[in-house]
Amino acid sequence: MIQEHVDLQSLNTFGLKASARYFCHADSEPVLNEALRFAQTRDLPLLVIGGGSNLLLREDFSGVVIRMALSGIAHEVRDDDSVCVDAASGENWHDFVAHCLAQGWYGLENLALIPGSVGAAPIQNIGAYGVEAGDFIESVRVLDIATGQQQTLSREACDFGYRDSVFKRSLRGNTLILGVRFRLWRQPQPNIRYAALAESLRGKQPGPQEIFDAVCAIRRSKLPDPAELGNAGSFFKNPVISAAHYARLQQVAHDIPGFVSGDGHSVKVPAAWLIERAGWKGRSVGGAAVYERQALVIVNRDHASAQDVVTLATEIMASVRQQFGVALEPEVQWVPPFSAT
Image 1 (cartoon, rainbow, N blue to C red):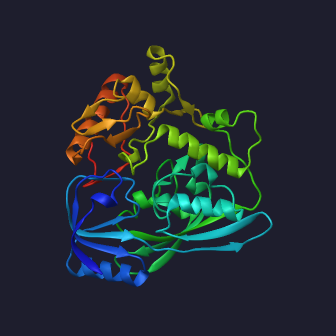
Image 2: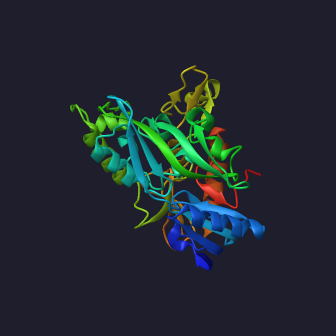
Image 3: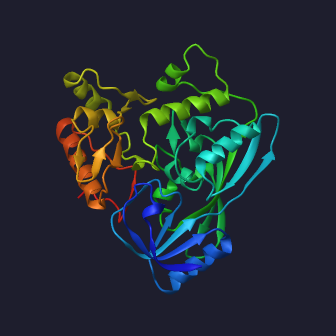
């Protein structure tokens, strides 16, 4: 069950060359527990991956890579309005969204075609087109790596934020996500508040299937298929700046878009706009390039090395900071971790 010297190039959607000293395909909890014991008894570092869609592997990994492949979906009808759906962490996210839609369980359709696994959804609190996974997560079942004990965390305990959760902070490296419980609607409640989605559905009264199809069409028109052009999706988070900073930027860039927070004190600015305005769209370093259709995406254009991607990303961050005074933060998980210093 534990393999040695495993090539990870096909297991990260960037398609970067890297290998694992040890590797485990954890398709059951006993296999997962065996891999954890193997790592603990040898005092080896752990890297847990799912679909490999949010990874920047900067070098070979000297410890144990565990690929979470737990599967299974179950549901429990709560009332006339809602249903609870339990999904194992290794389920493909887009397939899970499509499955829920087919069953008449609604709410996740705006999150269609996001690459990755169900287990990654609460870590990132993935979001798109006006919806975040945390809006529908009721609880998360986790495994304490040190003790082997399982625990169920409520939505409140997950402390979801913008592309953030407790799993990226105090629980990072301490727990593994085994499964996620979602509470979904049994009656459609379409959400088309996001401008690009509303524009694509103008003049229609869309149901969940139409929203699902529209989201897929928009994403395919803007984002490259990792199977055809290696990438890790949105490379940077959209930065949140103070309202005063945003007002200063408006004086020199009148068309800068921004989304004001509910309290009016902060503004979320599209990272793609900053990157494109800084002149990076379509530019490359080595085999890595900024995607010509969407500046938020870095692609493996021509057998890129990890260093090509790192150099391009850091140069983009420095350029945006110099021109706008805004610090971009990677959304992609760097292994080893990203350091701003």
